[in-house]
Length: 346
Image (cartoon, rainbow, N blue to C red; front, side, top):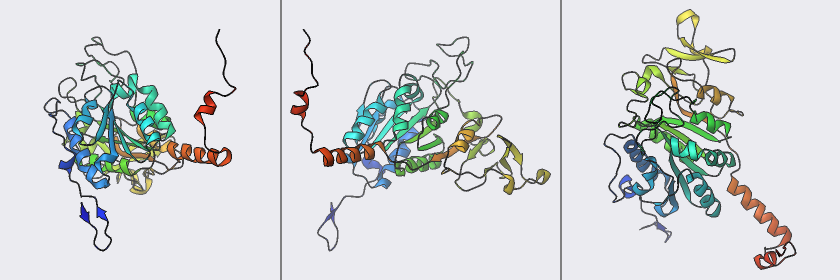
């Protein structure tokens, strides 16, 4: 540690991406989108200025859930669907820690769906990264909660009969205070979304479109491929009109309650006619409208859909505890156990 000149205090050493790389062999399939996500998270961590011993990554079960092995921080590789539960307990008991959840569309939205919903509505100051590849990759190619309707897989040979979950819609409906989306093959945008999530005070939720090149290769290629991305992806920017296209000549306009794609310069349409993105809107109505836009009818939105400020659960619980102690004094476990609210079973 370096000494701060004139203070006698020691400065923590400046960290680099390499400081967050472990000695574990990364055991994802070659070409998996998880490599990109790992690289961007490792690059962002030093920017946070948080010591490694104050950072914890928690996962459930699935390909994404190997994440804690590859981050040189503290971590839990927990049980299926329960990463949000462990993260909640840890953050309440240790609010000083930077807590991250790495989960997948199966782990987080199937067996873990109920836990994810309640974690989001409670607004703990934790960060949730949901890797969405629309398939169960670890168990070799069954359909997942986000698989498209009619998708043929090993567990749906005649096509799925279920409507898919939209993760961003679920997060908004669960009263999440920060909701974003990014793509594994856009490292600049992805690292920006990870950093924005870390800076948010409250539960941040980032859906990441992630390619499983073995069991669902090209799931998002129709709109994420480099040669078509500018025409089929809408990058959300706070305070800016919703413009997209290789020549920045297309936009999103509101027609009544419905969004529509328009061409700038045609029929007198200008940027003044377009929707302006407001991620800090008092209500997430616009964010929800955007979350329903999908290719091929619309460009797929990426970026921050919604960001709101609300007291975190750990702050509220701490305030409640301090108030009760002020009014009634410190608690007494022995007195509670031996109190009058007991009974004997014959």
